[in-house]
Image (cartoon, rainbow, N blue to C red; front, top):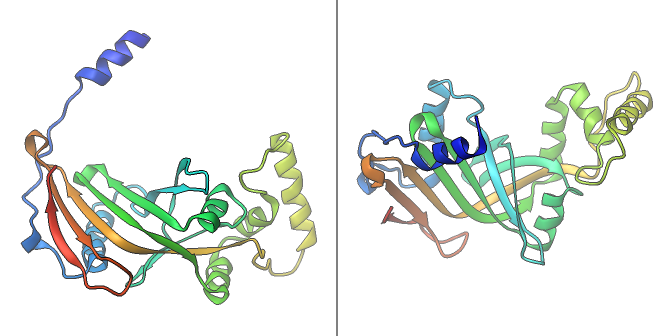
Length: 220
């Protein structure tokens, strides 16, 4: 397919969203309860990686960065994910804890957008999750200097082998530079696609982390 054909396809391809109505009266009082309901439906629909989301961060220079990663827990406090604290996302969150997460469940014509602030989970929580990971993933956490420049793929392979030798015949401990973040939400939007792009958007908002939630409808 030529570049022109690709561009023409992008401009002309259309599909309509035929979801059922979704209104303020349909949602739970808590955005986490509403998220749990939609997340359960995404699992029951056998979507591929329904816990995958895109995380947006920005450092002190204000330049935004996006990446896809996996949610590993959610509670009334918010969403938990794990990463290398020395990565770009870790550096950004140390400079600016404000961030946004977006879940896209295309097969269900749904998105969930979360705006909030991130903080590190306590060491015990990070230890418990790290202990549940496969051994190869644990070694990778020690081997990868995430987001820094690698001379070659072999350089990574060599570091994995070094980590394997270092922790030979012993349990691999959690690296001090690796652990979890909790995104504590201030705004959560539930988007459901509707015909003619007249989508339903229901948004939970609060002024701070202890305020009650306000539930509003947004224009599409």
